[in-house]
Image (cartoon, rainbow, N blue to C red; front, top):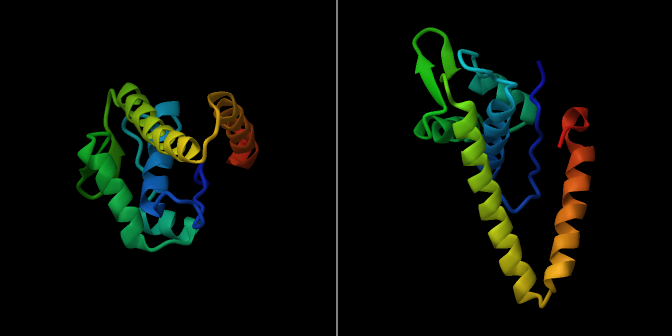
Amino acid sequence: MPLPFLVHSSAAQPIFRQIADGLRASIARGTYAAGDLLPSVRSIAEELGVNPNTVHKAIAELEREKLVEPERGRGMVVRGGTRAMARASGDEAVLAHLIEAARLASAAGMSADKFDQLVRRAQRASATTQPGGAP
């Protein structure tokens, strides 16, 4: 199954963070449910064209958040009851990005209305760039 997210090397956000956010969102949506195995580090790295160490760093972040855990002989398994936790973590990640974007907008002298327009535009653009058109 192909990954339900993409990474962009030109984005300001580090690649490992994009991967962690993508996996976290996939857990929150139930794409990876409790008990499911995440794809291997190697397969994620190959699919996204990134270094396996970058993927490992992203998965280690999810492990620290207690969303996944290693299962000997199987790989990284999504923990039970993590969907709500993943949503909350995802909310915090989005908020952090919005705060940074709001700081940039403020420094550029942008009005709140213009910033809101750009947020809505970004939402529409992301809906067309995600695999399957999912926002």
